Image 1 (cartoon, rainbow, N blue to C red):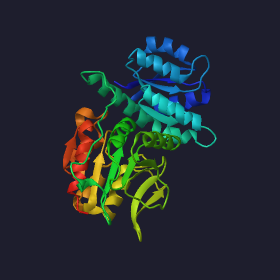
Image 2 (cartoon, one colour; image 1 turned 30 degrees about the horizontal axis):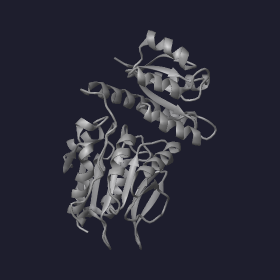
Image 3 (spheres, helix red, strand yellow; image 1 turned 90 degrees about the vertical axis):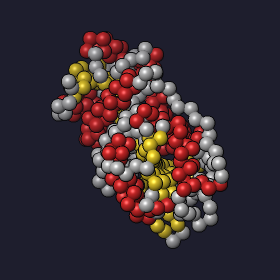
Image 4 (cartoon, rainbow, N blue to C red; image 1 turned 60 degrees about the vertical axis):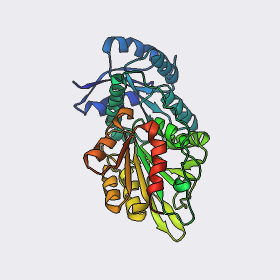
Length: 354
């Protein structure tokens, strides 16, 4: 059966764009539209959609209030938030994720084309639906994973002078929550950490800033051609691939807007392949929750270069897609539950050559 979608937005243009775009996908059926949450409530009862696309700023009731109401009612509907490209929109997007939204996309405006939304929408609707199905299949309601900070049993995992080790991490659907739990549980003083999360451009800085506020070391968006330093985590900006390259003073970042890979920019494979070429056997790669196969081929390159590959266990993934693809390719050294991953990362870093 096709995925049933209800489109909720006060803009007639956006409603039509979303409807027309999704109608081209045979696996999706738009069953209705609404221009505010009060109308949506009535249509939800009659149409029983699987997924809702939800604007944040609407008359009579804003999208965040409606989303929180749905969360209290434990609604089975997966929500894809369509948020404006503003700082306020970024803040609302974070609050929406906290309130249970599965995905966040940029609403078309003067700087973001309708076509840019259309190119990604069906993928994200399917990812949100898969994530919500996974949530319902779990024996108990999902809650944010709380970690105790990991502590090195020895100094082996901490960065050393002339250290060539590198930790690279990739994630997609469910990854914002996973990274928000995992990264703050790692201690300061580790080798450099580079992260690719599939994320809209307007949202990536807000996510990095939040994780930074929770972590014992610096976490921020990467800039082009900057040194990659120990005790620091750099996250790829939305809409930019991130690579690590060799410079005269060690590793450096390289940002690019080359074509999307696996329909994504940034893509995990781009980072992992660059790490395989530059840091090779000195690299630990970690692949977290997400739909699709991004990261698997990069892990294969890292395996061939002598690195260590770790994936999140199926039982803790919001969507067991990207990790599954790497496991099926036969390139994974360790599969670890998310809550056990901080300690597993420290142990694996300690096993890498300097």
